[in-house]
Length: 538
Image (cartoon, rainbow, N blue to C red; front, side, top):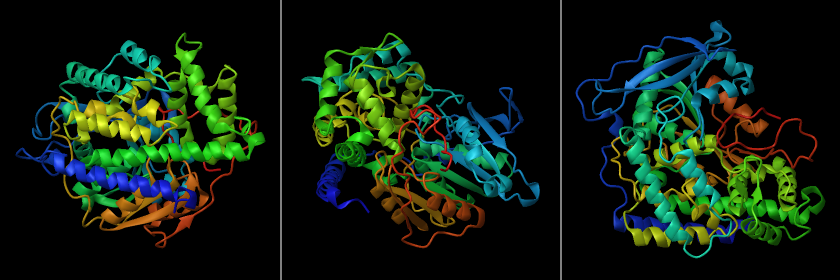
């Protein structure tokens, strides 16, 4: 479903991926973890949490909040507990109530409580009438025992010193910083980090199901939330009424052969940025950046900001790395934001205020810490340092626009987790290892976007094929995830959640919003990595 111009790149990417899979297997990827580890290893079952509902921070939005006590270590189901923040809003029409709909955000690192409350108004009446809408902060995130590694000063020093065009020694520095970050996680959250993996997270969801008094649940998970949903369905298939996995992960490669998973993510991101810059070249007036040579202008802008950073209102520098970091998240919005990205690049070029020149903030550091720590708890990279250097270097080189700054920079988002995870000191008892087939589950709807910069479309194809009863719905578009970015996709998802009617096999939606002229929006254009929300359907 990708464009024909991307075919040579795609063949190279998948060739590299096959080599990486073979190398990882030969070197011994994941050591033997217990399949379904979150529910194994101890006599008896964990107590079902008692939820005492009350107001949420004084907000009058119709949501209630509670705290759920779950086992810290599922091998000791009646041992020490962890407090999870939970929220719900009751079905608007009790006579039509169907059950609960759990909304799970991306990340890892985003608050599920905030996601449910911020996304509620975007849901159609058919879902708000029929479902109690439920969200929770997963273990290690936000209000549920937030994991701590580097402090704000340490993180700021690392990202402020990073460059958009890394020089000699960048790979060595990335490995050193990965070790320092992993060591800080062990030092400051050593009692928590072994237990924040998705195997335990799935166990938490099932305890919440029981606490809510439901035999089954419906689930919408986007991006990382798709992996959470996949593991839940694998462990508790009979408890799934309906499940939508949007911006899906290929679960086996993600957890078991992580280098092979990472390589296409680098190239998907670079390809998306490249298509935007190519549009700038064709539509110079609408984009306003690059004067017909946007790729060259972008490379020069990174170098210029490295040589002479813009000092922001916070007093911190915005370098070429800052530009790459912000573009990595904002490219997820798809074509409609392209003119705003052009405008923001032009402002950065003029050394004026731009959302692409906003250094990661303390709120970003909280998100990034959980993002990396949870994935290191889930994924086991081969322990070879030479392999780490060779493959991280190759992955960065395969994506010349953003690969070097992101892949060889400090530990932040998905693309550069390997240097920390290879050196991760904690055990991984909460990691899931088992079949992802979800045999016996209800049908599961998988959403894939062909030009997704964050979770490549091929991952959704792989997940739908992995699940015993997976059904793929394709959105032929740019951007990350599909629900509420397409009226076509949204109508099919809403019908499935309401009536369990699946789209026909092979369905493709093609109604992406086109580039939107600047000045038409009344709300901000910036994508904030710390706050996930289902968008309002245009």
